[in-house]
Length: 130
Image 1 (cartoon, rainbow, N blue to C red):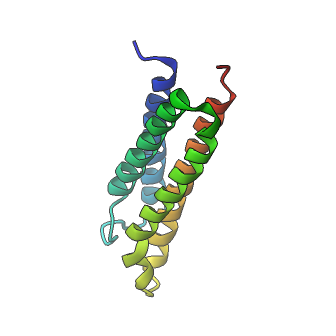
Image 2 (image 1 turned 120 degrees about the horizontal axis):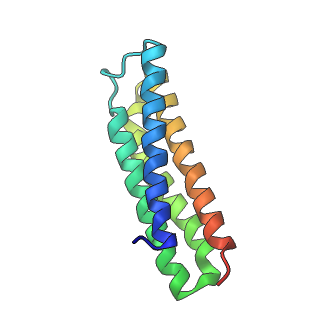
């Protein structure tokens, strides 16, 4: 049986899956072609899910060792994730064509969704009684 803390990673997975399905549905409804994207939607969700799960696991370890610095560890992890996101996004940012605008928006929506859920999970982790 999963402990309460590790169950949050399962919640993160279900959130990512639901967001992915809605994202793909929006692309189908709006008749947008994602085949020309530099990074596929699947790749973005996989990368951001992996980074979010890794950050949460690190926060669980930090919580066990020193609860007082969980918030700072979250800030550092979020900064690192943003840096990795920028490095991934860099080839897209260098392209100035109009078609790339949808891909940029797609990337930032995915990034913000995972950042929001990470923040909610961390807030729940910080509010737990020790």
